[in-house]
Length: 222
Ligand code: BG6
Ligand code: MG
Image 1 (cartoon, rainbow, N blue to C red):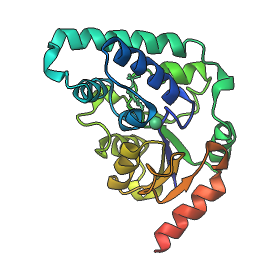
Image 2: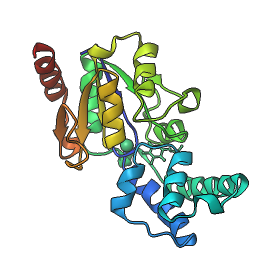
Image 3: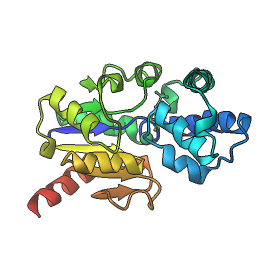
């Protein structure tokens, strides 16, 4: 295992909850039903695709023009940015700071594969921007998760072969992306969404270098 590639939202910090709150506010304005169950389908998915899924869910996709959709996307991001404004290094999910230190000590490369265009500003607020060897720019990609492109791009920029990488995700689409990139897939949280993962843990505090490395090795021996 030469590199670990992280998702951001819901893995490094709990911004998955903030995306949920911002989308919920938009859905309520549009009178579209929106709950945590439906929100699971948006995890790991781009801002544009998320809006499409919400409008589809309300049977309203054809009702909104391109420019009206653009306005909704701007509004969602404004709500979201207000919520992330308060993020500090204390908002790191439990165990993530320790895991990053362990990886650095073991000289394992660290990359970020997040669909979020807000990722760099969140990493700065968490005081983590210098910890990452590579941060993939999602704007540079053709396809979003579950396509493997984002994880393959991370491995490519790191100069590490995909089989030597582990990816950590909290979303079904993210696990699918890691798996089709040919990497070792580690799922966090929601067990139902994580059934395709090679290894899954209930919470970030369960993650450690030893756990990842042992799991990765076992998979290589299979
Ligand atoms: C993903 C989140 O990481 O980023 C999605 O799981 C989000 O919920 C997507 O829609 C895009 O984020 P942003 O910050 O560019 O709107
Ligand atoms: Mg996520």
